[in-house]
Amino acid sequence: MSGCFRCNLTIPERQSHIAVKKGGKCARSDGSAEFIESNTRTTPGDMTERGCTYAGCRGVVGGPVKDVIQLTHGPVGCAFFSWGYRPHVADTDFHMKYTFISDMNETNIVFGGEKRLLQSIVEAAQEFPDAQGVFVYNTCSTALIGDDGRDVAKQAEALIGKPVVFFECEGFRGVSQSAGHHVGNETIFKHLVGSEEPVGDTSTAINIIGDYNIKNDLRTFEPLFEELGVRILTRFTGNVSVNDLKSMHRARLNVVHCQRSATYIAEMMHDKYGTPYIDVTLFGIQAMSAALRKVAAFFGLEAKAEEIIARELGRMQSQLDYYRHRLSGKRIFIYQGAPRAWHWIEMFRELGMETIAAATTFGHQDDYEKIFERIQEGGLVIDNPNVLELEEVLETYKPDLFVSGNKEKYVAYKLGVPFVNGHTYDTGPYAGFSGMLNFARDIDRALTSPVWKLLHTNARPVPEQLHALSDAT
Image (cartoon, rainbow, N blue to C red; front, side):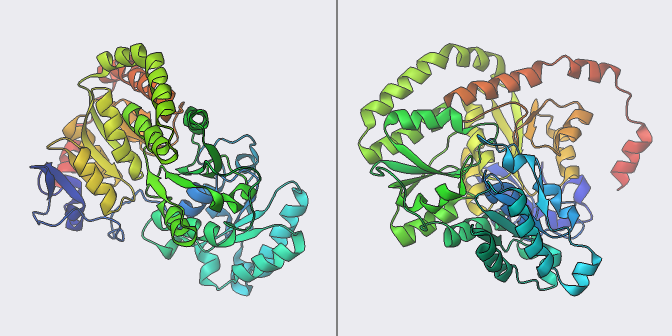
């Protein structure tokens, strides 16, 4: 695809966010020699799919912590990202079962909401005495009226005798939810990390950084690391207790999985405590094997790692060959948050599938460099696509499968394109060796479902006048 998308004729600024891999390099659709533009403010008129800073902090980083009261300071509408948005599985459902919000109304906006926030924290702590702390997330309205949430948090902490952490993650702070990841990392590091010492031997302790336990991803790889002979001290932040976060500074190594949302805390720990970190990918056979080998090499456990890898591959090879035979040659359009887009290009390749287009919601330049490195020649790459662009790609490139999130599945269904939810998973888990088979199974089911044949046969055609209207606009 060259030039501007048909849907973007009135916002040509979008051209700098669209590129094709040519000669192994990025070729922007606006004809310039610069790299694809990313991590910039959304162009006015662009119906962006991005979330806000609050969403990135509350919905990704802080939200999975299982034993704290997750309280949003703002109007009730902000509770959209406060309840059941992502299935961060844990061994308690407290963080997913309940939602807390200060429920700011017009009167509070005029006269201030600090008293209301303090009352909300204290009442919630009294109602749920087993909670080990309170996370408070600031929103646009309470930031604009100047509520001093940090001071309220100090008062509340003295009253309830438990940590009260205030996240300055008001939605307007950054260009996308990516800024919220940074705020979440920095706040947890400053207020919690290093405040307690762990119990037991930490000579082989690691932290798993940047896994949020979507549909129990952790159970696919944690037992393998433990069998290797290392102790998982803290998860950041899937299935984690607030008290675990306090002692994560004593790990000997940080193993960073999501390199967009969590590298920040690994870097801060390296600077303050000297903790080294390694970047890994825990999706796919080759990447999971490489992650085990990297950790093993750090602790001198290489022989054990090879034993585990050989055993796991032996268990799954026949099933993997079965799916590879069925899926080989299928063409994929993947649209994910950021790292998962380039993580999964390799995962698809292991199944014999081709990624013909890739997009991310909030990727930075380093994410796109990795995408261009991995995607095939001629592959289309889009930064922060809007739904009209997604439609145009699906209709023009005609991928066999679209892998995206909750919002985009309806576009795929309406266009009759097989779809797999890669954001929150419909089944899963997808990480680790066993997760690879789940991933292949769900792709195979999506592609072979008889509903697509029925849809193309029986669906009413779009009237020609609608096509003409679309072309005119």
